[in-house]
Image (tube, rainbow, N blue to C red; front, side):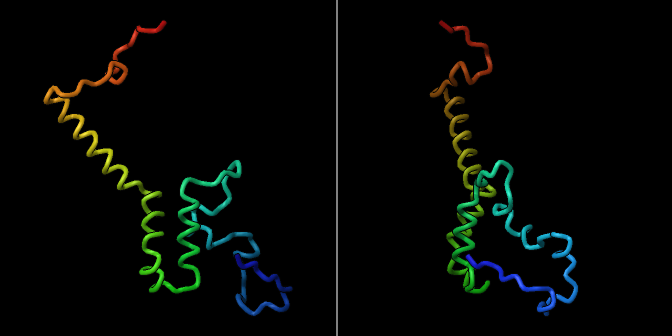
Length: 120
């Protein structure tokens, strides 16, 4: 991890007018949603995947990062959007509905929405 070097204002060359720095706004933070400050100091769901992707693509350039870090990016994207998980869940529900229609599967009583009175 690179630590920023703080220089006195008289030694700064760029930027000429640092409004975000004076106001205290970090403009790069919006790109890395998971790595921002979190309430209760708990790591977000996809923080580990984002960290792996950033570590892989750090310093190699955008063109090389797209090729070399594709696996890390796909893991991070799946964690954020859950497309494969939703697709699999849809297929499972479709198969269950097919089995129910054929009479090979009966939904449990606690899944039907009817009250169950078999408490001890």
